[in-house]
Amino acid sequence: MSGHSKWATIHRKKGLIDAERGKIFQKIAKEIQVAAKGTNGDPDMNPGLRMVIEKARSNNMPKDNIQKAIDKAIGNNSDVNFESIRYEGYAPHGIAIMIDCLTDNKNRTAMLVRSTLTKRGGNLGTDGSVSYLFKRLGVIEIEANNNFDTIMDIAIGADCLDVVDNGDCYTILTEPDKFLSVKEAFENNGITEFLKSEVTYVASNKIALNDEDTEKVMNLIEALEDIDDVSDVYHNLDI
Image (cartoon, rainbow, N blue to C red; front, side, top):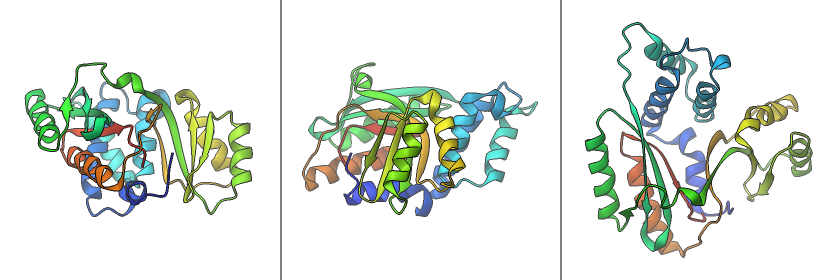
């Protein structure tokens, strides 16, 4: 995993400094509403909701926004009715791409995803065509101004899968069911600032492209992320 390209840096900071953060919050609010619907809204009793709240915090989503999304989902007159859909396919140059959506209109979402892929040199695949290339993992990113040996000691003690030195940050990988305990282990050791902390999909093997081709693929990924119904885009491009 490389941490030196401009694309990696941009995406690492996107949730923190992007002028479009309101759009990011809106997408995460949908995820919170789906996770909270039909429950009492207590994250301690709902691991799925707790995971999404961690994602919201990782993106600096205000506590009030998080609570409003929960309240909307558990209210007596809740109109939350989003459906989860996953699309799989390819970006240019054979880059695998997996697109998770939350939508109240499947036809609209399918049209938008398909047209965005087609216009930028990608194409949709069948279910399962690329999902086997990804593994669900807990991912924690910490700025490299922390001591690497300290990070390693905490990670080993918390039974992490791997620690990667990206140059500008450290990436800690965990099994999904150990993600929260690993994050807590870092917090208990005084490391409370995270660039990223969520359970997500990580490509088992990544493909490196030259700068020009990388930009083409990233432009497609960013166009997909701009679709309101798209919650997450996963890929195996090495950035």
